[in-house]
Amino acid sequence: MPIQEHRFDPKKLHSMVSVIVWVGALGVLLLIVDRYFIRGVSLGADVFQNREALEGSQASGFSAIAAFASSLGLFSLIVIWIAETNILIVSKWLKILASLNVFIAVYLSIQLGSRSLLLVVALAHLLTWLFILRARGLRLIFRHKIIAILSIAGLAIISTLMMLSRVDLMGFSMQESVLNSAYSYTMVPSFEVRESFDDNFEIGEVAAGFFSLVQYIFHGIFEFGLLFTYFQGEHEWGGRTLWLPLKLIGIFTGGIASGEQAINVGERYGVYTTFLGPVFIDFGLLSPLVLIFYGWLLGVPYRALRQGKIEWIPAVVLIAASSILWPVVNILSSASGSYLLVCSLLIGIAGKKIRVS
Image (cartoon, rainbow, N blue to C red):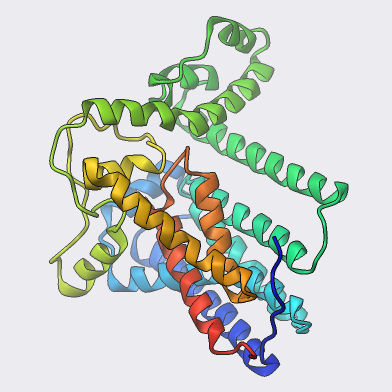
């Protein structure tokens, strides 16, 4: 991917990087206050207790500000990498603070047993690294490919360990989980696979954990087929994919529009239905028209990047990550995607102000 030459005003670039990192740090601090001191999440509680505490408490304007600012902090390292491509020297303390922003925000998500934010953030950083290599005119050599493969393998291992931990808390074995979980409704392991789980319990647990990851990745394709076939109910006209603006309106206007999900016949809860599922629930048979417009819209940051406007890398990598996850989940239907998308667009818009002609 050829990218034209790009330059920023060094002083303005340094100020922008500092603001993003420090606002992100403030957001992480606010998120800690919101989770632990306002909404009842605890370090000593397990995943399910923390989820129950969070779901049982009311989100507020403070929660929205904390979520948004901490999402900006998740781009801390990415904007530093972009700045360094412009020969900007960033202090090691700012890099440490940026790393803490990313680590703590992701940890708070993992504490709730959520794998989606970890997956999106990891993919965004991996793709940023690849984009910057290309922006510098470098080709992907064997070493780069090994790093990418090891990163993806590490993600798979962490995701599997998280699932093993959750199943253990429920008092099930992993073998039982892959046969009885919500994912197994459309993806049942074959007799041969189940036999391999039973050969050795310890090895079988790990193997079943990896099979659960396969279910996690691929079940949504089949779930969407069920949703499309059996869905009955009123379409929500943006309630799933545009939930963030609806939620913000509800929070700051006292509940005029909360963006709460309706109960629909044919929809199974606790499963993903690819990127298309929430879009179909929102717009029904008009979804293709919505997707055509959405597809055109996603190309705008990429075309800007091709013109040398490297400040759009955060938006491009997030869009690329959402495209990779298209067969699995719609990241716009969760906070881990919507807040990040808004923040990435703001970075691109702000970068225009500091770019040298």
